[in-house]
Image 1 (cartoon, rainbow, N blue to C red):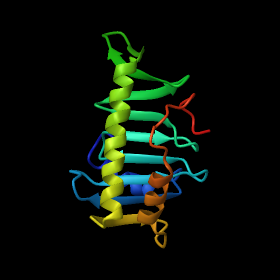
Image 2: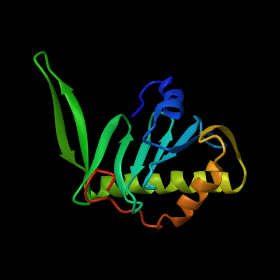
Image 3: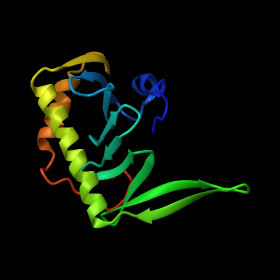
Length: 161
């Protein structure tokens, strides 16, 4: 997931796993939003370099990058994966989020997606670029957001399927 300002541009050009993708300048968002879909219809949302949310084909959250922390779904729970560096090695430390932490993250995600939907549906955005060029990506994103259940579930696994 992108961590540098220049990575945003790279996503639109190089994120070939996202066969449909768009960069949107959206009212109310400080940085461009990149939304992409894989061949199977699973979606990824990049609100700048952070936060990033990735969903599976059922619309369940499978991975996220929030506040500099990589999160993944395991057995319908969110697990934080943090790199801890020592003089000898870099260790990946796993810690499960509490129910309260998960609910807070899902609540913030829902609010962000609702704001994105309202801006797109209201025409408060500019399409900065899209792949493929002839697609109607804003309409595609609106349809996906409208199909997303009100209660966002956490996936069983972090994989797309």
